[in-house]
Length: 189
Ligand SMILES: Cc1cc2nc3c(=O)[nH]c(=O)nc-3n(C[C@H](O)[C@H](O)[C@H](O)COP(=O)(O)O)c2cc1C
Image (cartoon, rainbow, N blue to C red; front, side):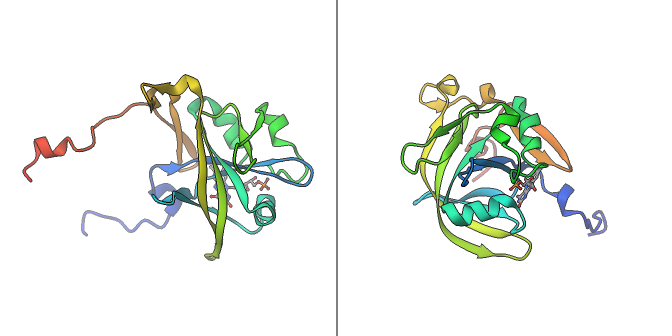
């Protein structure tokens, strides 16, 4: 351990942090919240987890609706993504403020962000208090991809130009660097 330092700042230690914008219905209008604590947790059924502080306005809405949209942003949307993470939807319509449009998903009829390259509709199955955050475990009922990013039955992520986050900054994710399984050709089994 001589060549390592104890690092107290978890917020700059993990790279990358997956950035998503969650859309959830409300009594007056749908709301948007940017989240870093989010990820895929199970393959079949496909499950995701999002961690939301009880103090967030969106937390109440998630409890009420038990369903949400998960929207995966691209680099060019960084400004709106940041906005949805620093302003509360309690008194502000974040769809109007960002200029994004809401479309309804086919199965759960949750709001999704039309302009985002990939969206998923998710049904909350369990809510687990963890400490500072509540973990919402949800089943993915449908995934949508904007036509312009589909090439030969796969998503062209080089076109999407994804967005990630670490150390109070947004980072771009532009190109693949290594093919899965290629190591078997390069390293001894
Ligand atoms: C990059 C980024 C990541 C965030 N990740 C989370 C998160 O994982 N969980 C959470 O509760 N809040 C997170 N936040 C804070 C909320 O997005 C923020 O408090 C937001 O304004 C809450 O909106 P609401 O009041 O409309 O629910 C994050 C903010 C930013 C900018």
